[in-house]
Length: 181
Image (tube, rainbow, N blue to C red; front, top):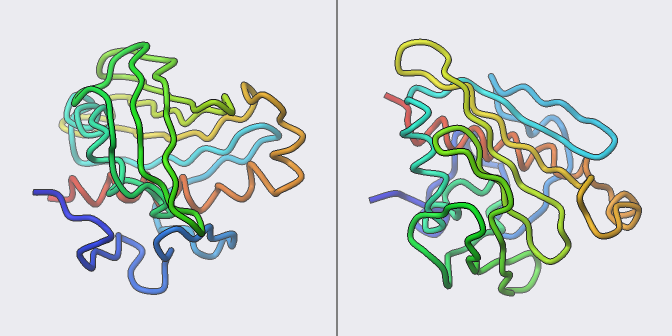
């Protein structure tokens, strides 16, 4: 069974990291051995994970796992949709940023074992890309991409994409920690 934020799990960055539903904004909160790339309309985080691309993809494509992956712990559970995601699938998630709410997402990019991305009605995307990185290893990149958003200037006013830098970095670190051997 996978552990999550509701059973005392702290994530690979240790104590003092994100609190369930918080949105950390300081770069010093970034986990070690995760690189980030901040651009005008996106922010990405990358790390090497001790698992094959197929193993990592299987973790990512299951909405029930998203709460343990979530870097800011804003994802608290799955509500509806298929057990394993594929192109065009819609799925619901329980969220908490200050107050609890639910959101419906749609898978908008999909390449089996290599890439999956989803968006909600705001149309900005959370994209995961996987590349083989040697025997039993994968280069894992998560990107928050607001270039596809309904109105990117509104997101910039409230601090995105920079505001998501610690979140994507911690999400990638959570995937790495899940597969640590």
